[in-house]
Amino acid sequence: MTLSTRWSTLAKWWRHWRTTLILSVVALLVGGPCLLVGSSTVVLVWQGLSARQAVAAHNIAAVHRDLSWAVPALSTLRLGLHGFFWLGDVPGIGPTYRAAVDLAQFSFSAAVVARSAVGALPGTLPASASTLGVASTVAARLPEMTAAVARHQADLHSMAAALRQVPRQGVWSPVARPLAVWTPRLLVGLRDVQDALPTWRRALPAVMRMLGFPHTQHYLVFFQNNGEMRATGGFLTAYAVVTIRHGVVAPIHEHGIYSLAPAIRYRPPAPGPIAYEFALKHWHLRDANTSPNVPTTVQTIYRFWNSIPHHPQINGVLFVDVWVADQLIGDVGRVNVVTPYHHAVFTAKNANVTMEYLAELAPYPRPGLDKQFLGVLAHDLVTRIVHGSTHLKLQVLQSLKTALARKWILLYFNNPSEEQWVEHFGWGGQVIRHTHGANYLQVVDENLGGHKDNFFLKEQVSTQIEQAAPHTYIQITTVTLVNPALYNGWMVVPYSGLVRLYVPRGAQLVSLQGSAGFSQNHVNPTLNKSVFGGFIVMGARRSLKDPPATGSLTVTYRLPFHSLPRRLILQEQPGSRSVPVTITIGTFHRRVVLRHDMTIVLPAGLSVPAYQP
Image 1 (cartoon, rainbow, N blue to C red):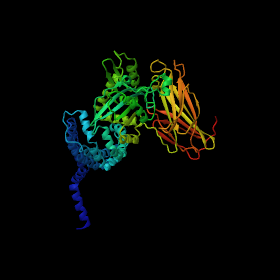
Image 2 (cartoon, rainbow, N blue to C red):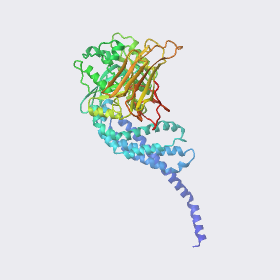
Image 3 (cartoon, rainbow, N blue to C red):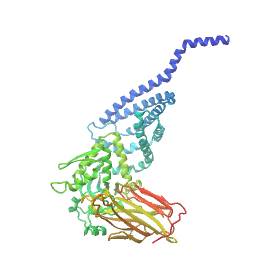
Image 4 (cartoon, rainbow, N blue to C red):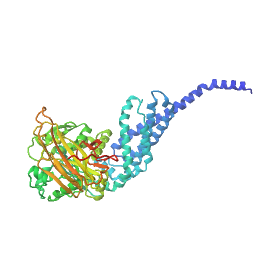
């Protein structure tokens, strides 16, 4: 057969079969992927509905079965989407297609991890089991669930890699905004899980004890009012004894702090600042949090608590700031609080003023009812969160994480192992005792003579270092308080507050300027610090024509170092918001906003100016 004859035969064959071939290629490139994507989508929708019913019925075995079906369905979906590879280069469609592929990969890996974690739970729970019952079951299996997740490090990395590849530009607008919101949050959450997993596994025995396994735990919880700043965050306005057994928290009943006073037998002399400001002979539990070091304050509280006849045995203490309530109210939107005496609507903007009104001004038929609304508020918040969306729960978890990092929630446990982990995570409010040659500064403000001025008052700190002689360094630290709020005789009044500086042990006071009649200059051996302080007294701003009320305290002291330390540790006072701190050493000038403990590293060869008294 000649070459021309062969080409003629091939041409005839092509004319006869070309339609079939083209349709076959189209079917391969479009029909096959469509079939895979369509069939897997049907399975996923069906399994999603089934899983929702299984969750409502507390049928964990059914949830695990649905996840087991979802994993191959997601694998099929992923394969089908890859069959549309040619869409990746189509203008206007490519970014959305690539986002779909990456999200399918993320979902597949997430389902694999979830299937393994759920598989560690018992098969079924009674359909009538309460939310707390479910929580108890999950808490009891935390070690098994953690081990299951730890076995899937590769899948966790795959989830993170898929999210990082999701396109940010050119995605179809209806999905672009959710992607922009959720992708960074999921990435942060995944990074936190991956980073914390090894430590979490080591901490699990202590965590299980904290959650009441195998023995019931009782914790003393104090609610601190940051409008009246104290060393650990705020005035101890209310308390509750919280009982946890097998991961379940018993109903919480809050009480005003003053209700404990008649039962307390321990009545030591009042510390100097409290005796000076209030002219009190005896110290009271409500003023017990005078040390910024939480373990020290807790031991003081225990002396008061243990003097109460037939007092419940306590396994630890928690301090919760009003800022936490503000955060959670902001998360849920608004909370209606109805008591037998008042009806109030709390929002993120009015929460502090509304709380103060109900606690200070609202009428009640008898004493002891002014803090009753706190229990109703806490119950409503928890109810809204438990029954809220997944988005709300994730937002609340982020808020609680922020509160722990900002020292708005402080923890102390009697068990040394548990307390060690609290200190490891930085949740215990411990003053750093040993700085290993670094300079150190913590400013502690205590509102002893004002009312709730700290809701409005702004604090700023400036510190500078100069050289008085060879190997002799002088540090000058100024604390300035500014209150722009107008006097109302209720929340805002003339202010009187004790300001203390915790500095390296061995520092020597040179001068104290701005203190009103009372000063402190001593060594705290427990914290390994020298302490200098005094009272800042400010008048009230009576009208908008008046400038904001202002006061300052300047402390000059000689550092106990023969050479200038290269590091300056700044430790945040628990309960504070955002404190600007300015550091100046010759030409070195840095301004930071203190929202957590920080270490400032000074440049090498820094020229220190001469001290000018």
